[in-house]
Image 1 (tube, rainbow, N blue to C red):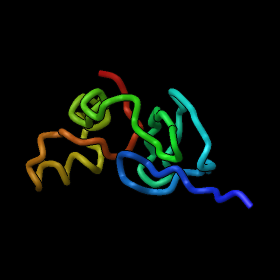
Image 2 (image 1 turned 180 degrees about the horizontal axis):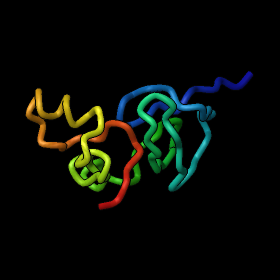
Image 3 (image 1 turned 120 degrees about the vertical axis):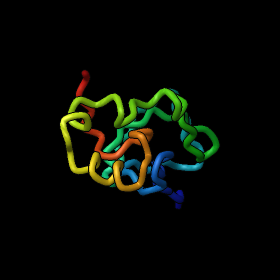
Length: 95
């Protein structure tokens, strides 16, 4: 019997709804994380998922129109002095 394993989100480490076998290979496979709500493009080889797009290329909260207009995360950002340099809700709206 073949063992399946869950693909883990490279951002938060949570389980996605995608299962792979040890011999699964994929390139530029988009997966959606149900926990952090981010869509991440991964490469899968030898049963491991590796992020295709570097985290530095992700759109940050500081660039989001919702964040600038006072979403719930902006209050937390002010208290923790993070300067919006994170990805929180995944509902990115362009400026």
